[in-house]
Amino acid sequence: MTTTTLHDVRFIEPAKTRNYLNEDYGFFSWVLTRDHKRIAILYLISVTIMFMVGGFFAMMMRLELLTPEGDLLTSDTYNKFFTLHGIVMIFFFLIPSIPAVLGNFILPLQLGAKDLAFPRINLLSWYLYIIGASFGTYVIISGGVDTGWTFYTPFSTQYSNTHVFATTLGAFIVGFSSILTGLNFIVTTHRMRAPGLTWFRLPLNVWALYATSIVMLLATPVLGITLIMLMIERVLHVGIFDPALGGDPLLYQHMFWFYSHPAVYIMILPAMGVASDVIAAFTRKRIFGYKFVAFSSLAIAFLGFLVWAHHMFVAGISVYSAMIFAFLSFFVAVPSAIKVFNWTATMYRASVSWQTPMLYAMGFIGLFTIGGVTGLFLASLGLDVHVTDTYFVVAHFHYVMVGGAVMAYMAGLHYWWPKITGRMYPEWWARLAALLIFVGFNLTFFPQFILGYLGMPRRYHAYAPEFQVLNVLSTAGASVLAVGYALPLVYLLLSLKLGRPAGPNPWGAVGLEWTTSSPPPKENFHETPVVTWEAYDYRGMMKAMGETQNV
Image (cartoon, rainbow, N blue to C red; front, top):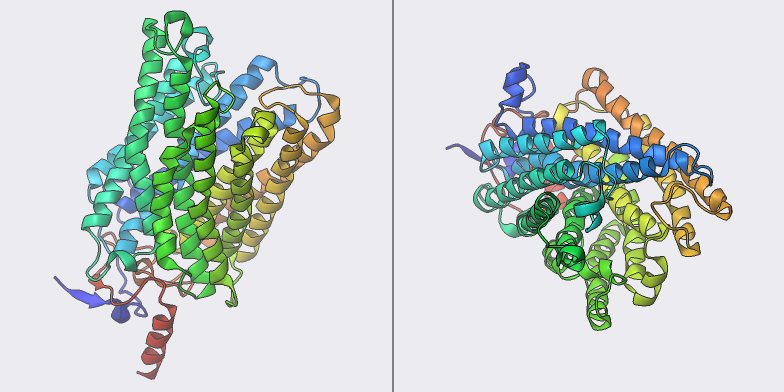
């Protein structure tokens, strides 16, 4: 087997070869592919469609809330819209977006591998996702579901007359897709690293995906068991959660949040990995405290399993339990704070290149920090009692999930788009979109912190007139946000035909993915690379560049 060191291949343009995009354009060549890059593209198309569907429900809700009266949607329709918005965005977009799209494409390239460990299982995970999303689509076109995305019992098991069974079945099937993806990532990281690529030479994106995969494997089965019991109670009327049948509704909440809080880290840990890679690339510096940032990912994955009951402070748990979970919720913020401080230290006195991926990464840091800090407010018992089930919770959740996960997803998509397609996008339009998304997001959700603190409850389609001004601001921000999200869809698609060729390394970044052609060949690398230095070694890169120029 031929090998070459990273110094040998970094600045050499690979020979012309057929890449994964032009091997075969036939339909069956795509839907039966075992190439991780093509499967990532299939996921990209799928989650983008689901993002647009979820965004439609969000815009309809914001238009309803433009006025205090419920004059656009009825209360039942509004209930279905916020339920479908949450289900589509969480289960069918946020959870699979970074791991299944960017992780699927980039992880083998960053490891120097030719593919994931189990290519057939990788394709199966996409099929399971499509099957689960098809159940969600069926629910949308056949009348919807009105339980909220949490499916709280006993309403979901006994009293809702909507399509609860089909919805939970879809979420159950998508859970298997997550489990298979996590298994594939863990085995690939352990067994398929390039020679010389030790654990502490791995990009922090790999560490983040590895930690995320652990959460997928350990937490998702709990959700599956919970949803099975919910369906059994709904169909067979077995008393598991319904008090009228001898069940315990708090048992459902414990089991649901035991998965759903770690699921927050399924969405945010990969975002942190993307941020680390992007910040290193556009500051030309090794991430400050590399090992602390790496281990903080594992710490978040572990501690995330210990804080689920802070969602239940007003549900009837004991004060002593609530105090313990409040302390643990503060403690889990420590490894997240380590990352933010270390990213900031990395940028200190650096020559930062303000290109589009870096703009999104900076937006991610700012918005995620606000979301994280306000999460500590919700972990404080006294304040949580006041703001539970208000728009304060909505704002906090979106600052973490949209301001955090989606901003980082956009950063990673723009950072690796030249590698995925071999084409550059128009930088000016991309920067404009990043600005619109940042401004539109803050205008949408920051007023909701104030609304929640003032007492406006969430999930209502009508509200007191004194809340209208802040709701108008929020709806105006949602309109700006929609334009910001629509722009990348347009210019990224146009770049496939009109974009200038990217070359193997348009950012001058380090990492194995930048040593192969753009887009990569079907087998990823013509020769097996051998890694000889630490992660993010930009000084080594500059030295190698000087040696190459001297030759």
